[in-house]
Length: 122
Figure 1 (cartoon, rainbow, N blue to C red):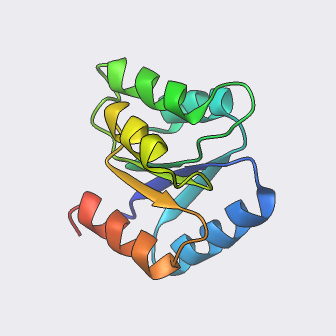
Figure 2: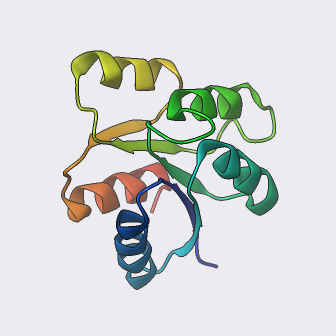
């Protein structure tokens, strides 16, 4: 059975590119375009991994991450923060909030796929 990945990003073009790349690599993909929708989709869809932007409408990525880590049902879902903010302080804050990995945009799709495979033990 294919692993399910949730992409939470407010850039529709990036979401489409990621969806396409992930589907070609055998993943089921679902998407959300703001932080609250992302939390709702985690609870409804139970993804195996979340790719999470930081700067989102409704709820900031840090808050989404914090809420998922505080939720006993969803706290173990791997989270990859994928964001335009590559400052050292932002990276550290992402890790402090519970992200398993942090990738700054622009990024190499192969690097993201490698991290996904490592986090999903593939």
